[in-house]
Amino acid sequence: MIQDILKEAQDHMQKAIEVLKKEFATMRVGRATPALLEKVVVEYYGTQMPVNQLATISAPEPRLLVIQPWDKGALGAIEKAILKSDLGITPTNDGSVIRLAIPPLTQERRQELVKVARKKAEEARVAIRNIRRDANDRIKDLEKDKVISEDEGKRGQDEVQKLTDKFIKTVDELLKAKEDEILSI
Image 1 (cartoon, rainbow, N blue to C red):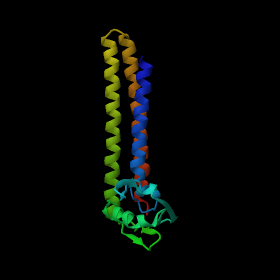
Image 2: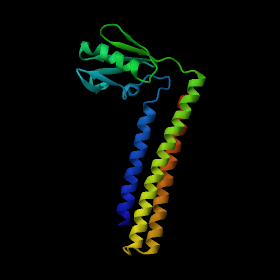
Image 3: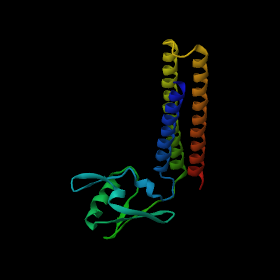
Image 4: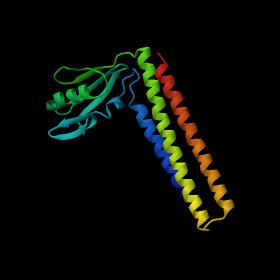
């Protein structure tokens, strides 16, 4: 019983970590990565599609992304979508590919990105704590229904807390790494 609850809590906490990693990957830190465009959605023939389903995205240089659509007709739509996105980068369209020059970050922008990273990390921590609360509630319900003893319930809650501490530590490590990446010039 308790093992099932612990396993489920661990799976959910792991998912929270994965979401945080994805969020961090899409943050622009002065280095060009195709992940920057993951959230950019293009309206193409009346359908909303991610850029990576319409084109090949490559980073030939540290500060340059090249988007090469499989259909040249998608160039304009991709360009519009990038302009509408919150990337703050102006695309250059040469008729066959779109180039995105990633400008170096100012110190002010770096500080803003650190704040955003901290906010995302805090959201992950809150999600993990909510998972802990749910798991503890389920253990207390088992205890209340006399399915498990009080001692087993206490041990189960201690295990949930250990899991929580482990995942919160992982969030903190990811945040520290991201902050270092953002602040490195």
